[in-house]
Image (cartoon, rainbow, N blue to C red; front, side, top):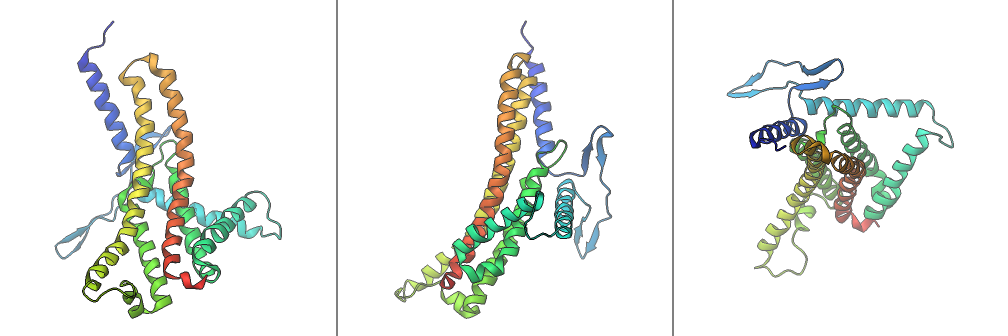
Length: 277
């Protein structure tokens, strides 16, 4: 028995709407089984001259606040049970911190610089990781799949990278290093522009890499599940099997992308403070 083309098109459109609703930001949140969709509170826009600022908490803002609250709670709980030899969850947390300090920070920027920047790197890693994992929960949302969020994280890393360079070389020395020594005078302006473009290309790469990977993973998982409704019940085992595989892979990607963002930030800082090795 053939299925009408119009019916298939309607189901495909509904599936695409579900995918779009999941991966985009909004002012509603699913709280099943209590309610299918709950409207988040709205705040009256603030007028700043001709500019209207809407500071209402969105779905992704709520996920970021939840991630921050979980990290603060985790830190307080671990701090209450400080032991010479950590056990349980504290030992797992210590393992991540030591890995970031010893295998990421010290490897890329040296011992002294690592001591200063490890707190920032750990904060970045755990915040991105928590946001990634929240997006894998039922009715959750991945804030790191929002380019505005990843752009802000990349901007913070950009400022930290510039701060590290200026702290090491001074403000004038930092800009002077953009022109490699020994470059002919006529080539110096071109090299300065090329190096300056590289300064801004680094945070741009951080932003796009994290955003694209997290967004793509959720789209692929939901698309595979949506095949069940678009095609027929016979694709159920194959679609669910691939969906579960992609879900496990996305769990790995959640850790991997948090690590890559942190490692690249540490590497970019290390390029400016390399003389401390």
